Image (cartoon, rainbow, N blue to C red):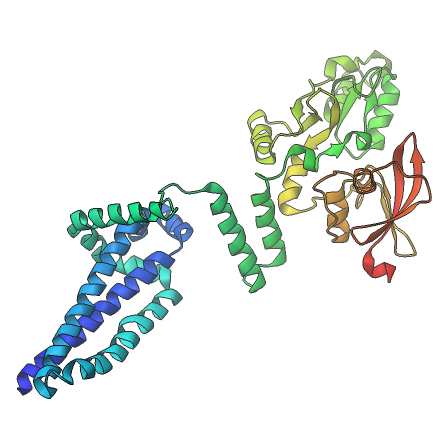
Length: 425
């Protein structure tokens, strides 16, 4: 009797350990980071590669570990019931077996191993992947039938189990992970903003970040060469659009380096220069172009500058490679850049801004959160929210900010005074 009891206790202990293994395998493999496994696989980690392969057939993997777990639990229960039946009789044996086995299975077969697997999901997944993989292969026919049945039942309930990965869901998962780690202090504010910016490239269009037409510095191509040189020297930009007639008739783009080479070629005799000969062809892109697409186009064409047009071909603004990069890394400034051109902080704490200033630039400069969904510039923001062309001196409360119209010219808002909520108090 003593030997039989020892054998039964040993078998029950082994079955609890086996159940613990299946609990660890299920939790670690379902909680493992696919992104981290992909990176390890790229670095040559074969176990990480096998984890990815197993995650691609997640339903069969779950079926295999649950099958093993259920077999271990049922076997342990059967042995325990048999032992206690012999000791206490059929009346009390099943009850005592249940009272003894339940806490053992709960603590050592479920809670303890699953908690450990959650804490160290990635390294544990790489350890358990091989035996689980063997199980999936060994029980493949059974698991195929179970998978087929489960998918049909779920479809009846309106759930379509598909192997395809939704790219939008993947980006939202990454965005959520970034926000979570930032909230927990694992990612700094600057790192968070960079990661956010990279994810936003597929959600923003060129029209959202372009420099509006009214803010573009242009050169009249009919001006004398000396005056064109002076205009170029007055600006902080190395490339300027050149027009003839009206600002919509752009004939090309003038690069400061090309102009200086032309000056040198003619020994400083500006009257002999031919501006048309050094103009680069203007590149026009639709304002609906996605930023990621435009970034790829800049890289493919090895250009940094494009003019933005609407569906009718009207020039609405311009976009540069630097504008897109700033969406990712924040403002990129050199010793010649103004903080934000057209913005001034008054002695009274209010902000004085030209109407053409982009909302996104002002938000970055002041750490504000004015909505830029419906308008690109400050003037557009006021026009959208008021629904009219205001007069000079009018004051509006928009998004909690106080906007005072300082100057209006030809139905265009030229300058506004903005007081944020904290200053208003």
